[in-house]
Length: 439
Image (tube, rainbow, N blue to C red; front, top):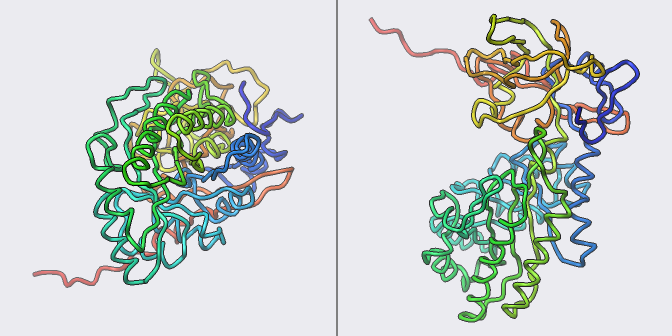
């Protein structure tokens, strides 16, 4: 059995996280319940930050908060001296409400609205990652109206695409994100912003994919982007201050996954950028990265109560839980794989195979197919591992199911980070019918 972070099995045979019994958490807060191991989040954060500091490289490690966003999560990120990557006005608003330092917020997105960009100016964020020509025109217009200057990065697609372990140098051009590095778009974007009095161009940003287990793709991308920086210095005298290499660092979901430690990704990136800087006679830029899943993914565990069971003779055994695709759509959307245990029987041998079904009215609402588990009974608590990224953040009220509560645990203590939605919450924005019935 693979345990994550501070997870242990106590004398009762129960799974504990952060020194807290998950069965007691389920009793106190109900299920479905997201439980976050904040000590593991802190450890992962330090793993990235410390490597830059030990190697003497100026950097920002920005939490890519689309993985999981709430006030408490942003405050935890601030405690760990992370910067912040937001992708919507809602995430930006939440970060400001959390008291996150605005100058460490970076705003991403391929279709930022005028209202979102205005909020970015009003709150004084540190940087906008510019994605397209339309956005350049909006930023110029807003900056002129407000007589403010905005720092930006240009997001580019470097022609390096990550497919799990395979990296190719021909892909990524067909993307909704960024300026193509190879067809002249990036050069045109550079010309439009480099001398604008209301824009300070810091450098370039790229992101090659997600759930990456090797460093080769990052090195290829860094080399290509650095070459563009070298060309701009030679042709225009522009010296980039920042190179943002994005995120996408993989985590272990199942035994097939073999992720690297944070320091391995960082050290390889630094070596590549240092080598390219020397080759191109460039000053070493500040390196920014954007881990999201790799900070919170395996720090999150979902607790469910097992309800009905069904046996299809000679086919499979089902157990159904009180959540499903409404709190974790990844299995249905991406065919994502997970592992689980029965948290109140954690020391028992895994002698049974079940397909874990959700309660939503969709035949595709299956969380795990053919899960190896302890013998299950109604009322048992199922703990599904590595649900901390894109679980709650992609949750919905499909079938009018309330979204779960979220609890943070650390050093034997626990706190509610997000309250469970009530039925009343589900109808709070609904309005009664006022149209007159026709004859």
